[in-house]
Length: 105
Image 1 (cartoon, rainbow, N blue to C red):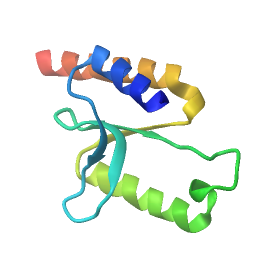
Image 2 (image 1 turned 135 degrees about the vertical axis):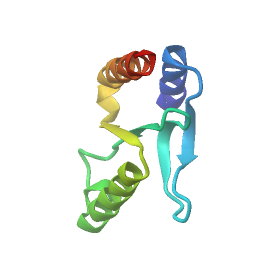
Image 3 (image 1 turned 90 degrees about the vertical axis):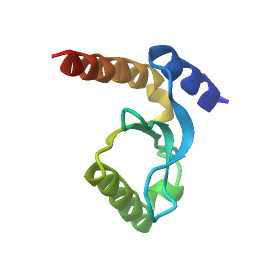
Image 4 (image 1 turned 180 degrees about the vertical axis):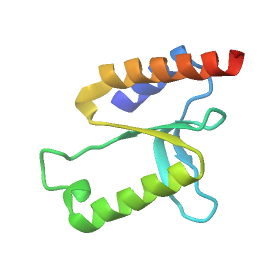
């Protein structure tokens, strides 16, 4: 439910956002949200207040590997909790502003 809202908000900022985007040529990793053309990814880190998958050491190690590989492939990865939707939208607006500014110079 919140995923649909986030996707709509992202596409209001810049068209081209998608949910569940596979980004790695070999691994099955996916981003929660991504703009493939701009290589911007948004990850929502759930289960922070319960003992869930993201809180287990082995899962954290796998997430770190995923994010590092994304960066090595040229992606900008932004990470948030479900409670940080406002910050997410603000940060994406700022990042896209800077990308547009850099492209126009």
